[in-house]
Picture (cartoon, rainbow, N blue to C red):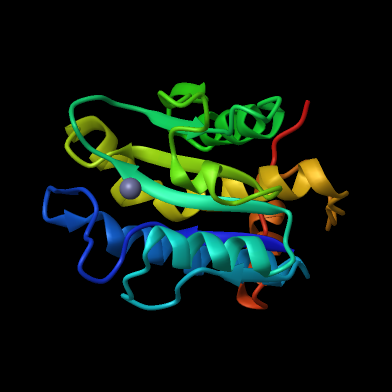
Length: 210
Ligand SMILES: [Zn+2]
């Protein structure tokens, strides 16, 4: 089971820039990750499924008590920077966070950094790490709402980016079985099959191999 946390919500809009409120996009990408993972047969739990406010305690209690062991906490940045960030606990080896960061880059969003942050009391700085017990929580900042460059990518790619993170997490925890539907010399035939599969509701892609 994978826990999906839509950052912010209710009276807490999170970052606001370019006419976008962070809480709306975190909910959108979280719901998308849920259906993406459910389609793969993987159970999910969301911290919120509507525009609802949660205190840090309410949010982290949900994460801690639902029985999952990995949490993706979805966020969008602001404050003058660009690129995606993945933040892991000071107690994590960072491998899962690096895998998520790599997936974001491959999906089209340059990676700013993967890091962990210690507070003054030597504990995790972020409550999503500090208060979620043994759950491995990744805080994913998909990009900066106040960066023109990031915004162009986020407007077009945010659902794909969210999928790539979800898939990276799944791959770290279990095998994923990829179905190949055919191999063709003519691109046209590949396109025809791809279209047919998409019409049937499959998430088909074409990969060129030499
Ligand atoms: Zn946030």
